[in-house]
Length: 262
Image 1 (tube, rainbow, N blue to C red):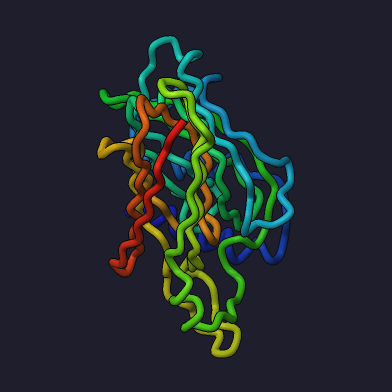
Image 2: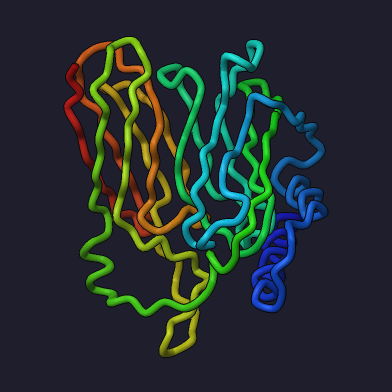
């Protein structure tokens, strides 16, 4: 029932965003927190950060960098990171499942925002302790609106992947970039002609492995921008192969691999 209420709250924000554009409302967090983390303490810390523009040019493509500074965390080992946008109709944008191959976390990506909001990065340890960093970002119109896509072209292009790894020094962090072509429909957009809602159609998971060992799994939500982009670091210990397997909410699978050499 609480999550249904959060969804209703988000839908109210979606409708009101066309009428007014105000600064982020800090009161939303109490409701969102109770829906996703009921009766649990969350400690605000400096080792989790959200970096992004004070005001985004487009609510559909808000650039953010998400940081878990493990060296500054005094031994706090995070296993999951949740990205939550308080004022979005669907607040959970993505969940990152971390491994020891990352040694911390720095992710540059793009998210959707329907209106001004706090963007939160919440980390969870194996024993369930929660920590948080946040940033207020002003943006508008990223989740709803109208679409006028050629359906056959959209589906033909969906799933095309580009991936790259900067020349690494093995045993040290290497930077990888991942980009997958996908329209990432939210389910809240309307068809330009019929004005009916267009069904959600989006990438929902991406799993990265190196030489068969998991690097990171991402649960992707509709709060992720069209053509999902991720730039992150991992530690390859020897020459090998970086692979990704991505799926969408209709059950299709997309794969790509890349040989990594010095």
